Amino acid sequence: MAKDKSAKAAKTSGTVVGSLGSLGDYLKEQRLAARLSLRQLADQVGVSNPYLSQIERGLRKPSAEVLQQLARALRVSAEQLYVRAGIVHPDPGQAGSVELAVLADTHLTERQKQSLLDVYASFLALNERDAAAPPDHP
Image 1: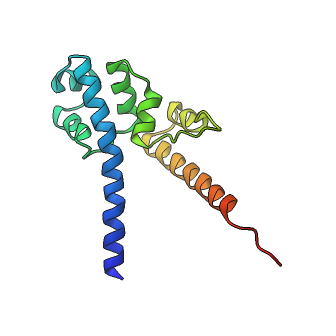
Image 2: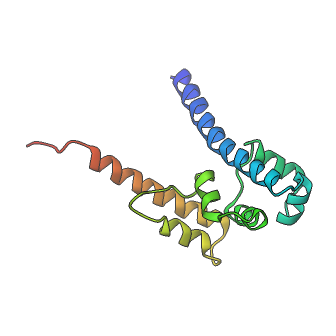
Image 3: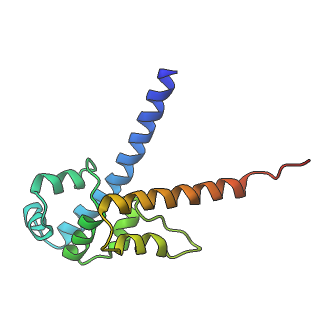
């Protein structure tokens, strides 16, 4: 049983690092294209140089607020960074308006925003699972 839990934890952390790695790779590409050093971008965003380095290497997950600052400094879409960070999930049927509305709400703390997004994502996953399940026959 403990072996199953550790395998599951390793799989989950690998997934998180993988998605953050793609965000970090993208940020680094954009930073280099903008001809900015790590230190210059960190100064523009208002974060420490080591913290930004950890984001680029996929070791840290930035908040929505830091992503907004990065998008502004790099002149890229904040929504694209949210998708790459796994905060907003692209859905062909929706434009992600719920996630974007939550992220844009200045009356919520970062923790509250993340909690709302987590609950919303769990509802979507539950509905998707229920829609895919075969109907019960009496």
